[in-house]
Length: 395
Image 1 (cartoon, helix red, strand yellow):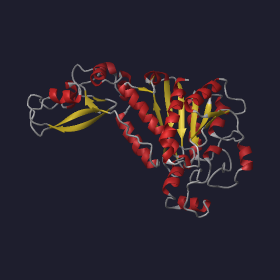
Image 2 (cartoon, rainbow, N blue to C red):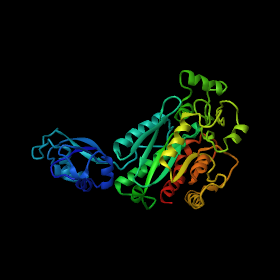
Image 3 (cartoon, rainbow, N blue to C red):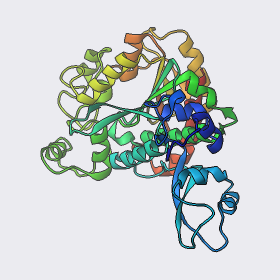
Image 4 (cartoon, helix red, strand yellow):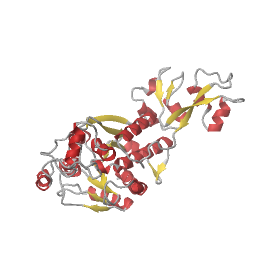
């Protein structure tokens, strides 16, 4: 919600007027110097939308504000050209509406278009979100990273490394929406005050690593050469429900130089719907973008969300730091998932992250069944995962 600065206004005043934490207003306006506001300057207030209201008989600003439990001066601020003493029946005024509801519904077929729509809506309501395009998919879709918070501890989450695991993106995005709601409305999540997390943690989130693969699974092959090649790789079948790879048939979570040669020796030797690690490590733009991001952000811990199995993989060749065990045990406690230290599988993002940065890295396998997991599991998976999201910030 945009407002215009009046004489005597301060960001502190806006924080009290709209009951929004001052730090969120400051971070929503990075180009503004808080101590030197200029009359007429536009200020973004997070956590609000604006609705239109038509004046009815006997209306006053006080009556309208009282009915909606908002401050009278908020109406004056949003309607600077309206004389409150001369309201006219039928006249339209702007009313601030505190957002107390999710705009993200994760319980749906969550393709790249749904993700893009939700990102746009969240960015509009919560302008303290920082956005960066870290690269593009094979087909040119943006790989978006979101950053929330101002802490020195950078915690990273990602989803949909595999096309048919798109439900992981839906889970991440719904929790992100709940976190943003709690921050702006000064609420807790599961009894936990999340406001301190904003100061202590910077969240780095790449909700959909493989947008081409996700769209292929959910929407079928695209027109043109990429769709034709995907059909050839899929042996002519239009059922792409088992497709894990990117649009070129490369498994992005087998692309990393952490015993890559071991995986290459026992996996498909050419593009396939799953498991082909590429002809060499880090050939695919999606995998490269994620590797470069890790190098730039220097995550304090990293969580890659996959499906399925209700387990959390957390070790690699003994290179994981001792505190990784404490963290994963807490993840297991709050979710019911089983921590598994080592497994005979390599070349994944978690493996490479632990190998290169010697920081805690986790592959979290959500839900149980056959991928893609059905949406009938969404609510249960979401409830299991909330504790992991929270613990990743407080551990």
